[in-house]
Length: 104
Image (cartoon, rainbow, N blue to C red; front, side, top):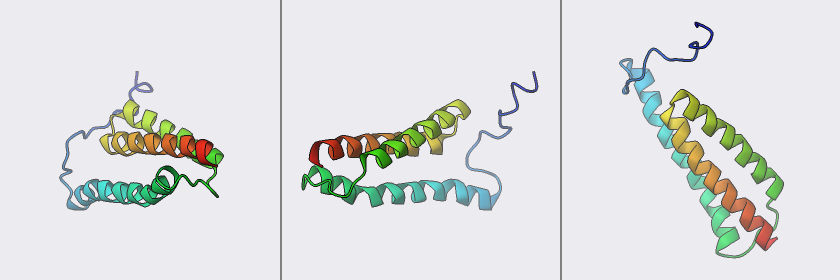
């Protein structure tokens, strides 16, 4: 039974009682938002300007697959930051791949 329950965490409460871990718990959302923000110009370039020159559908599909695995991991372990950010990444990756296929 121990082997099955090895991934269950002792702490599921946020904020974390240790200040530096609480800071990390909060900053992960800022970092995740910043990563998404950096992708928005790519989306605009593809969908608004109808220009996907130099954008690799294969690379973005691979990023989408990676984000899907991280999303699955986050769901399996109940990790809210992983669920939130990777849900958004999967959508962005799909939009970029579709746009690349249309406009390249």
